[in-house]
Amino acid sequence: MRPVARKIFVASLLLICFLLPFEPAFLVPVEVVMILSFFLAFPPRDVLKRLLSSPLFFLFAAFFLLSFFSGLASENHTEAQRQIMVKLPFLLVPFLLTGSDLQRGENRRLLYAFASGCLLSGFVQLGWSTWEYLQYGNPNVFFHTRFARFMHITYLGMYQLFAAGFLTYEAFEDTGRKRLLKLGGALCCLVFMLLASAKIMFLALLLSSLLFAWYIFRYKKEPRFALGFLAAGLLLPVLLLVLSPGIRNRFIYGYNELLNSGQTTEGQMAQSTGQRVLLWKNILPVIGSHPLAGCGIGDVQDELDRQLLLSGDSRYMPKKLNAHNEYLQTWAGLGIGGLLLWLAILALPLVQTKFPGKFSAVLFSFSAAIASFTESILERQAGTLFICLIACILTGMYKTLKPEST
Image 1 (cartoon, rainbow, N blue to C red):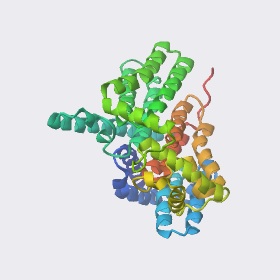
Image 2: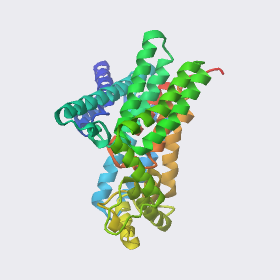
Image 3: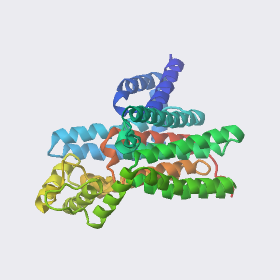
Image 4: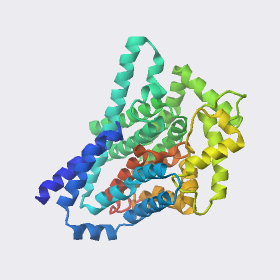
């Protein structure tokens, strides 16, 4: 019975990783199968032994428990319940993955499933846009929210950037045709990230291209490929800006909003960048009123809305929005302790993995950290599932590897 249940557990994990780049909302039936098969597959004593020896489980569980008790103390019970459910993966995913006996090769296949899902979702969205273009002749269907049909553009960019980094690392573990195939897959992921056109991910691509080039040159001794990735990181954004006047105008407008600190003329609504500037400015007084313990994860939105009314900036906002910065969002809701736990979660894969595996961990931490500057990524399951799944898989895959000699 246990061997069969274990196979079902691993198969459900593979399916979740593969389907995650499409839409996390429809994964619930697969998640139920994963949980049931876990309890049938692994003896409780063995699970407990693994959990007690896992710093990752304790760190993630501490973040969930802090969120849970913060929610209980919140005045807005409806929002608090939603927040607790969104944060539940911080308890459930590490419990399942750390408590299981997944081997390094199985964790590696999980990452391949995720990268394959990213590639397939990108091609599906590209095909969808192509069909619309043939129908209506509008080239804008290839860019921004018209392209990103399965999730918010920043989340899509975060997924695709990590997938590109993982495939790049794996490519240099192979030679010949397999290497070129994986490098081609990595390049496709970067293109899909650019087509989603989240402004912060353009910056992420420029910075990550330096990481790609450094890693390939320093550790794989392949200067031609290093220069190729550096050129791709610099030229692809320029090419997209040239080909899409709509994206170009969006960047110019966002730059002007940033220079003007998000302010607009009376009656005119702030756009993407301007909204974020106004939200950041107004969340700071909320943090200042509750710097240590936070105001409670269920009350952050209400406190932010009140501050926007008080400052008069609400007249520029078309609708209620969260802080759109995970560092500020977490600090406002959970206090300084929650912020420190969030920073530790981002850093843990780097601490527990070593080269050559650390390069994938670097891209994971980097993609999540930079996306968190302009998006509250833990406010949606697309963010919490990605963080918890990939952090656990990376740690399980690489934590026992010896450092590569340099």
